[in-house]
Amino acid sequence: MCSVWLSISCFKGQIMSLSIKLKAILIAAALTATSGLVFAEVVVVVSTKNAVGSLTADQVGDVFLGKITSLPGGASATPVDQAEGSALRDDFYNKVTGKSAAQMKAYWSKIIFTGKGQPPKEVADNAAVKKLVADSPSAIGYIDKSALDSSVKAVFSR
Image (cartoon, rainbow, N blue to C red):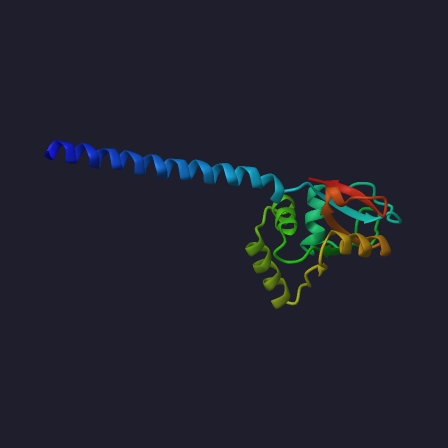
């Protein structure tokens, strides 16, 4: 009778172990399936009136970190951010500057505190970025590639 009890107990342990493995596989599959939705291709855009044809990742990063205020050729650069907490914003800064949302928040807190600059103007979404950039030759922003149209000009993509 004792050996039957051990066999049942062992069998229950195997089922529980299998259940935990199955849950882990399902979670991994769900994360993989949604990862493409969170990280879309980011396109940096300027006004069609802006003479700049393309920018490097370093140039874009420097503009959005407030390190430079003009583009190649001397045109003024006024960066426009997506809303804080948006996946596109987090993805943009991670790809272009290598900084997370928390690191960017700390970066700008320090810059503001020392009086060395102000963060980019923040707008709600892709449509707001496109409108502001299209209306201002000095504005530079980023949008999801799927939102790109003829109202703005792409100068960098990642």
